[in-house]
Length: 418
Image 1 (cartoon, rainbow, N blue to C red):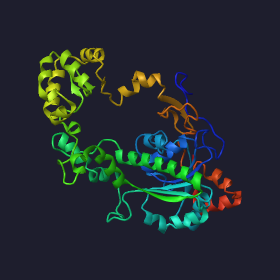
Image 2: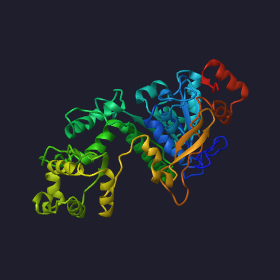
Image 3: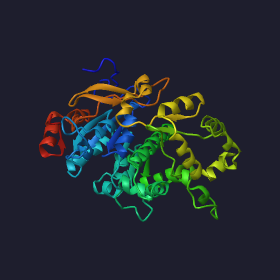
Image 4: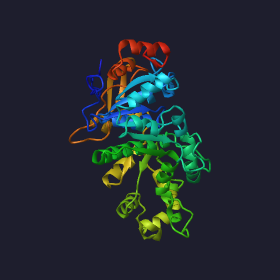
């Protein structure tokens, strides 16, 4: 049963229908797996698109990541694949490829995240798909732009983080040890870019009737994302410095240790600094030229943050929260995965909810984080079981029961076992 104290965000839909959001009537053929592509298409599914997730006979490998009650619905898969239907198709079988092309002929968007060469080998390259659906928006999310020497290389989040300088920046800001960000940041950032590109391409097609191919390479996207902060003086020719944003690279830019815990604090504006030094009992520092302006503080940020870190050790977290709150200085608790579940603000806005999943039972879901005054996006269905909608989708394509049975018997498609 759904917890009566929490809102169930998943509504039932009739076959073939997404939600009633702004993308209602748009069909997306999702040939992606793991995270980058699925994350992008889940955003669009929440906006009402009918997202058909085409899985290989082995299923999306991310189904196996993390605990699940049935063994094929790990949390990462569940959250990145809601608002979708699943059809299991062997694209290496001629009959399976034909099913994919028949689906593409009904789709507005096709998204894939293997290398383009693999799509060509499968007979599902852009030209083949555009032949059956000239107006289709054909989106590839993969490692590298196809005009560069890395074009055929495989790509994973960790590799792209390294290429985009993230571990080296972490080393510079920390103890000298390169580390990856403990979030699949490349997959998710590129997924967001892909979702945005699809929306722009849909708008273009609405105006012109013209479909198109879009390549969304991970390396270039993440290089742009990171260097927007850190290119700095390297933006000029000749360079004005070695690059890097000093405030972000300061070694004491971290949650401040207090007398009994940790607290996240941002002392940023002139007013913030004046009030902080006053409540810290160090008003005399206001005459220090290092604190005179944002530019001077940035130049001396390493020494300043070290000084501030020592100040925070002198009081408890609760004492600092009271002082900072009264002074209107931005601060927040440092959550863990456990404590964020109890955050009072997230409770106020109904961020977490519980729903009954058809195969997993009671699960915790997350709401769409944006709030719209009209056409509010909302999940239309829970993440699908493997091949859950295979027969339903084949019927929509006009196949008879006998034809669907032949495809299933040959192994070209698979249906849910549960």
